[in-house]
Length: 254
Image (cartoon, rainbow, N blue to C red; front, side, top):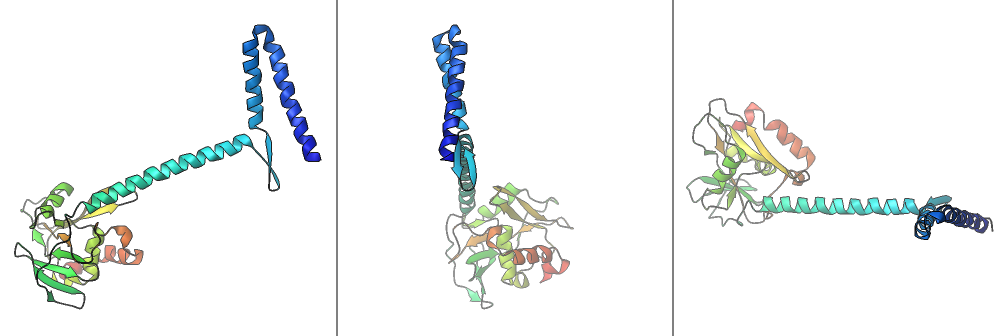
């Protein structure tokens, strides 16, 4: 009963205000008076109290919440679309999986093979990736930029099947024990540092003290995901360990 009386009083106030506005503006024209009184009814209706658990809310508040939710959904959808587009860009690094020739087992996980250029390659059965030995760049004394590094690996035979590895893919080579058999030596080198959430990519550089630079290229082997691996695919503990150990002087000789 109290609730009905409360709503009745509120409706009475709304009607009274609308009528008062109409009478006040009637001398300026019926149309303007009707429009103003209608706006009053609409505005006051937005603040009509709606009972919820243990209290009240207002129609305008519900509308604002729904508006924010809708905007959040649109923003999230746009973010997901940008993320998918970036992942497709990463996947486009490879024309497809590389047909690996006969391999020689080196460890239970790692095997070696010869690439089309006569360079030794390495295949990791766990990740499904294949890597080359370090491929020396033309000696200029300056490191390559990101596009030069990408193009270098993309042109390695067979063209389109090799790519500049992400830091995640280099960490998997390190995890598989690849640096023990194919060390960095004294080369400066580079990898692709990407962030899928932020849709950015940049060059991760290990500088050279003697002006020589080389790259280790990566390809998809049997069992590898079509887009390769990103930093999100690597457990945080493994990622941090790799980031710390790759900068130590002894890593290039492991």
